[in-house]
Length: 462
Ligand SMILES: Nc1ncnc2c1ncn2[C@@H]1O[C@H](COP(=O)(O)OP(=O)(O)OP(=O)(O)O)[C@@H](O)[C@H]1O
Image (cartoon, rainbow, N blue to C red; front, side, top):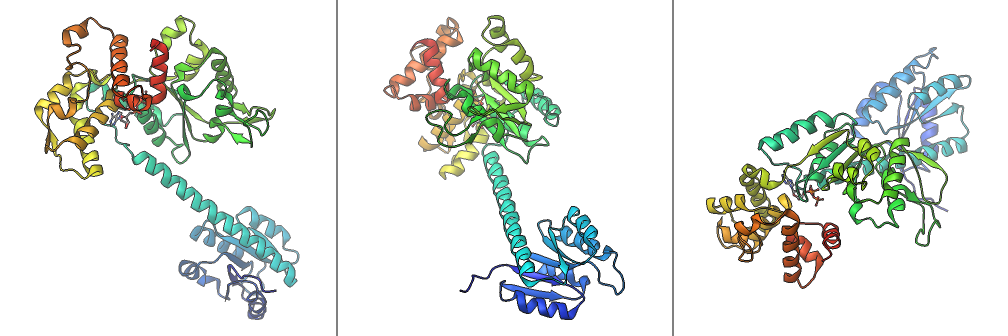
């Protein structure tokens, strides 16, 4: 039976007879077998060829048996390729040296004189290890690429207003620490964007940034989603699954909409944050977790603490540092910059020739309230770019679809009589009517996530 040959082997030994014998035997089992009697040629060989396994002698100079040459070349090989798999050739009695070499990064050793079958077994295992190492490297690369791609999507945070400058100063200061950060601000002010920026500038940036929208996690799935479960622990638990805490291990966990969780879940979350350990639903094994926690909310947690809606001890745990994001209407000097930023992005995306927004459009945008903040502005610009035939965006391009304050139903004066909640209610009703009750489309129009809109519908009894 012929086996499929795979793997390339390099054998480095000063004994020409040994090299010849090994080559003849191993060529029957591996794709390519190269031999080298002069270790000085190793760097050149490794820089020009790909070897899966390197079989390396410990001593090259006659009458020297300290193994120091082997250590020297082992380190050189690992310097050139940190995923190299090196099997050492040692003489009987050198076992202590071999053990030390394994501590320094060698994979295994074979004793001279070897039995062919034993050598083959060692090399096959070494080849498997090399393949796994390469796979892990590839996955790591893919993961990094994925994070980079995710982050590229609007990774730039625009803002020159004093309020945003203060935000930037704070995040610069806290990013490198492991302090828990609470980001507060209305919907669409950029809380997640800031959370990602903190992660990117932290020492955890090579690890995962795991985001959970707690507003969208149902009560029944809360524990399983966050802490994981074992197979069979409830009807739908078809297999073991890690929760978000475990997935974020060594990285950053972003808990969005933290103001929305029930008192029972607040207690569970607090326990996990205090003990830094999670237990999957249905298991009794605790798993250590090492995460940096960033939370966000658009709710007034301090007031909720006073009213008994949010635990004070949990608030103290999560808000070591608080970053308050200003509403867009409170930093209208950033509107021209943000508008330019989104015009550039969407003209590329939709292949349009729009160059800028007119002064009239900017001025009107600066008077508008932007209940959905930057997200609403972003959608308004996207829509304007798709719909307009103008090279310069005009006010009607931006405002043809937006409700307040220029619609006929209520003007700036009537707005004075209303509070934010009433304005929200009016906008939500309008959007739902416009899309015949379709929540997804209404949410998009309002610059809200679906779950945020659902919460508001519940809150206002709409
Ligand atoms: N300062 C900014 N510069 C550029 N883009 C921004 C800025 N702030 C927000 N955005 C964009 O606005 C959109 C909404 O931002 P993000 O999701 O971070 O807001 P959020 O406060 O987390 O919203 P929500 O409360 O609804 O979860 C994103 O597309 C984001 O890229």
